[in-house]
Image 1 (spheres, one colour):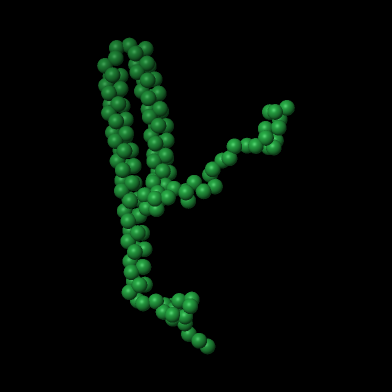
Image 2: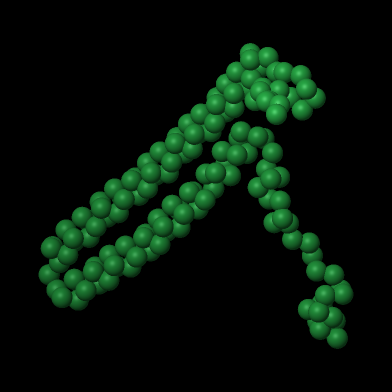
Length: 141
């Protein structure tokens, strides 16, 4: 039974160890660079999120101070309603921003590393419907 070296090529020759080490080093370097970009991107996302949270806390503190200073129940209800509306709106906005930034990060890193966005959009192109499609025939009739 013949034994094969893991360094033998398909044509029967052998690859020099320096070429294998060089290829492994390039791949490791590319992987480490990608990981660094991902971690930096995540750091920026969380920094933005924390900034929005600080602003929300400051706004809530101002609203609570206004509630403490108001003299009538109607003013208290109005301030509370405005605070609750702003908090809900800010929460939805923050969640949307966090989700969109998190979803965009891998795309950004991939495009930055490869310079080619086509693998990311492959299969996402939508061609306009033709007149032969059922929806177009019904609209034409």
